[in-house]
Image (cartoon, rainbow, N blue to C red):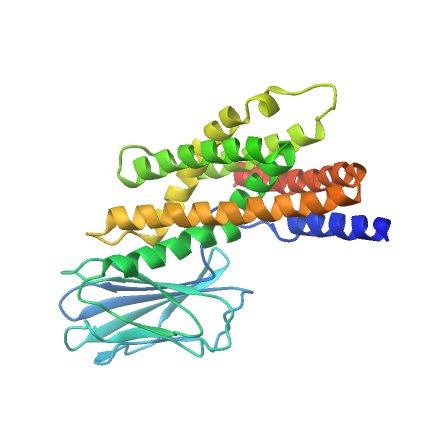
Length: 332
């Protein structure tokens, strides 16, 4: 029974490390994206990005606001594992108060981000779900709408941005004790908050390609540190994990900023959006940390040998995936 439990838990961790982290572009936030951008007084551009092989099928189609029409066929292209459709839309009047969204979203188990950018009003960002497949275009986005939307985006960015997910898991596996994990995660949080805010406000900046490669390298580094662990020797990373977490956190912050730049920030509510995104990212990190600590606690009840063997298997899985990402991002 003990052997069976240990094997099951070990397989679970390895499965999460390898299959849950299938190679994807860094900082991919969402499975679907709908953007409605005003071009002139009556002209709008509607962009619908539907992932290939995702949970959003071809029957899911945009729903235009009342008074808007899209004559002609959309322009379609395949890019970044998604089908992108662009519609030229003509709207007879003000779209404020009208609704926009997607048809046939009720059977989809994934959320979609919708971004609305009028010429004379602030940018809005909201989420479409199966329960709410359309949203109202507001004359002005209110604080709580912005806070709620960007908080959820922050949580999803951690839970489904697999490079950040694996970094946090590797950090928990490397360190001994909840206190050391708390210090390291706090340092990681402070660091990526600094670069996220600095980049978003235009004070800092790095090209996204080397940032993605460095993020993969940070995961490889932690995986190697886990494998090199010895009972009779404590490495510098284990003695001062906040230093490593802070330095790599600065790099991950540039990744967060790149993802947030893709979403866009609503004018007039930038502080609320930034704060909410950060809080959401931290909530996602805490969920990961508690889940990992819970699995390790279960393993300790079996035996310390189970902890050691499962940690080693997981670290090899994490290191393999991160190494693949690193090579892929270096060679383009």
